[in-house]
Amino acid sequence: MNNTRNIVRLLVTHGKCLLLAKVLKKGFFFLPGGGIEYNEALYAAAERELWEELNVAKEEIYLIEPIGVYEHSWNDNGSPFHELNIICQCSIKGFSSGTPVRSAERHLGFEWIDLTALGKIDLRPEAFKTLIPQWCEGQRMRQFFASSMLDRSQG
Image (cartoon, rainbow, N blue to C red; front, side, top):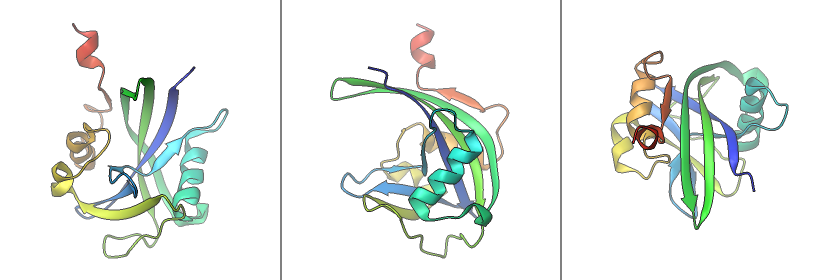
């Protein structure tokens, strides 16, 4: 069984706030986005995910820019998973931290979270709590690639 996925994750910010998706029944947060399908370009995947999750049309998106890659592996009840998360800065017309965001998917909610509050929520992957503020501050070149596996490969 191949549990390796390429994921596009969208960093949508307004001021010091970040838009996060929340799995309603489980209560944890993650950056909006999802799997890149076979033979699908990164930008097309980002546009599709914005449509599927938020009903955002392509014409409403005025920036999708890759800013980082995060490699992550974990076990979920004995099943191994591995992801390459491609983080993209994203700007959408009319999206601001003062405006509620309506989900297009029943199992998801969306909330604007102050960047200083990231440490207080269940954000997955956990390392995003420190990486997201760095990416938001423009530390893209030095922190472009990060991995939950780096410590394991050095041992």
